[in-house]
Length: 378
Image (tube, rainbow, N blue to C red; front, side, top):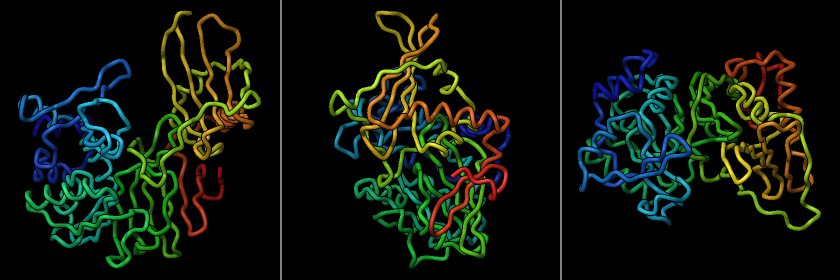
């Protein structure tokens, strides 16, 4: 446990009340017998940990700062296949600690958790606020919810557990003092704001999936809005109702476009988090990138996609020694040009960092701004 505490907070930024809760709630009680470990870089291979066949490795991994995948393809694919969409996991303890520190729950608070998962964070919340009825946790997946309920009961924690759509909250248990979200969010459901008392805090991973993703801490105001900023990094699997539509091949020759760009794709793919946040806000696009090689040598690719449609995307390719770089685009929307324009708009603002951006959530819309709510980007 001492090693885990040291790993999750190497710079001493997590407050003691969070560390004390983590010491009090053993993580191994909430980790399944078999888990999938994703490689830390794109060149490695995923592997399994199995408590039955290698208990030492299983326990060492559980008490390290490691995310452990517990479900593939919503349960349709066995973990032993090692490949599929990651749809549930036990989050890395450092990320859990960071978000709990931002949440800042006090004893006696009423907390709504979105995404029960293994149940470990729900247990930590019960430990932090005291009592057994102050925490309500919602999980959309029935099988995951059943296992979490068993984990929590066996460990001696009894929050209110709900199987259902977390975006709707739980009005009968409102008003809440804190909302803690453990899945990636692109659009904050107003129900969470509406079910909070003024002064409540909502902490969530904002995941537009353009480069880096971000943590958000919102404060609920007396007028029924929520306002906050982006204090750091956080990336989670998306909430099921806000998943992206996978890119699809061009439907015909008219949808295929080949152009060139003078902009090195690495300039945008490797830009700071502030640029990622600005570009995703201005364009509404997502991105992915990969360093690779083929028969022609070294290669870097950056994909840009419209998450609302499967037929608007582009891939830009960098190769060494080139004056211009090729861009293959599907659909009529010039997504690469939009990204380039948004990037240089961010540059013209003085390259502001992530901490200068903020979010406002109202009943009608979600808005992101720079420096103050009057300077809207969206």
